[in-house]
Each structure stands twice: as structure tokens, then as C-alpha cells.
Image (cartoon, one colour):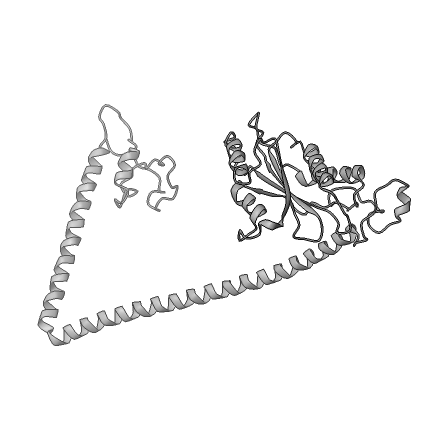
Length: 346
């Protein structure tokens, strides 16, 4: 007995339509028989509606459809009662015997097989059946059913390895045991071969990935170089055009050029004179701030906030003033400030 692969889904109608009429909807004759569990209806068109109504009881279950294909060896000649009993035992071992289910038997293949469609939401409690480790649970249930009903035994992926299943002596199991399936490749050897293939694939993939990374890195560097070259060339062209314009203007109208230069010189002189006036005013204000207080004899220290406002003033050290260290500020001072402080005459 084999369970190829289970499926989770959200649509009952689409799956039931596929099982009863085929992919294109023109194969209704492939259904040999079908049965339902925990439902009072047996109409293929109403079954998905009933399951959907039950699934709506759970707001957390996003995939209430659970599909279990169940097949047997081609040499096994089974009756409807045997297949339905095996399906019921499988649902019972999985804890789905109280859930709504539909069992559909097909005759379109040589080996007998059925499809079990289950609604994961319980019709009474509204709780969803958990699919955690469902493959292990199905393998364990399949092994029990094979022993109970005498089916041909097939080694499962999640069950202990049985040497009698993998081509061993069928008489070693004793009289009354189930018949053994045809020999096949040992599971351990298959796992080792798969591991070797995976390691080889990983090595090749790592080398290819590194080569692609280096190629992309070179391409990015080449694009960067080209972009910098274009930017530098555009800047040179702009400067060249500017200089050409200035030279043409200077040689075409020298009087206008001379007037513009004189105007620029005059403007520069005005800025220098204005800066000198501002500096002298700040210096005078600084001296007013540090003027000695007659009520407090002795040298007076320069306030930190005043020093910060007049940091650019020159000649503080030559004036003989004590310059305190600003809190958290830089410790570097000019050579003039490093001289011994002199007291301001009172």
C-alpha cells in the first residue's frame, strides 16, 4: 500500500470536480464508486458545499482541504470492501474518523487506488486538524494496515528499515506474515547517493556563483570608470567653453573688460574695509567685557562665552589675558596664548 503524496488546499469544489469529471470535465466514467463519511448527502455537487460550510466555522484555518491518494500494487486484486476498510482505518489512525470525508475510487490506472478528501475542520468542535508530521503518522498507520489486512508491504520513508521488504527472505518473517513487495534499491544507498549528488551540486553552484559575482564586480567597476570619465570630460568642456567666452569677450571689447575688472577690485576693497570695521568693533566690545572691576581687585579671567564669541580676535595672548579652557572644547591654542598670563592693570 502506497501513499504517494498528500496535498493541502483551499478549494473543495475544484478538487471534487477533478476527481469526479477529470481535468477537462469529460471523464465521468473513470469513477468506479464513491462514498462519504459523516455527511447525510452523497451528491457530488453538494458535497463541496457542505464541506465549505463546515470549514467556515474556523477563521484561522486557511487550507481546510486535505487530499490523501491511496494506491496498491498492480498484482493485488482488491474488493470495494477492502479498499473502504483500509481508507477508514487510515482515517481512524490519523484521528480523522469524525471529520467529513469523501472516498472516490478510480479505474483509469492498472493499479487499484482511491482518493480521500477530508475537511480538516471538525464539524462539532470547529477546530482544525493539525498536519504536523503527517507523513510519519501516515507511514506508521500504513504499516499497521498492511499487517492487519495482509496487503503487500512497501517500505516507508519514515518507518524503520525492514530487510524483508528490501529484497530479503520472505520466509524469515514467519508464517502468516504479509507478502513482500518486489525488491528495490536500499534506502540507505539512495540517501547516500542523494547526499553525494547534493554535495556536488553545492560545489558547482558555489563556483558558478563566485564567478558571476566577480563578473558583476568587474562590470560595476567598468561602468564607474566610464561614468567618471564622462563626468570629467563634461566638466572640462564646460570650463573650456567658459574660458573661451571670457577670452573672446576680453579681446573683442577691452574697455568693457577693464571696467569690469576695476569694478571687481573696488568691490573687493570695500569688503576688506568692512571686515576691518567689524573686527575693530568686536575687539572694542571684547575689551569692554573684560575691563577690570574695581570691586574685585586682581587679574580677571576672560568669560568662556565671551571667548567663544570672539574666538577669531587676534592678539589675545599679547594683551596678557588669562584664557580659560572651554568645557569640552579643543585644547589647542596659539603660541601667543601659551605665554605666561599678565595681570590687567587695575
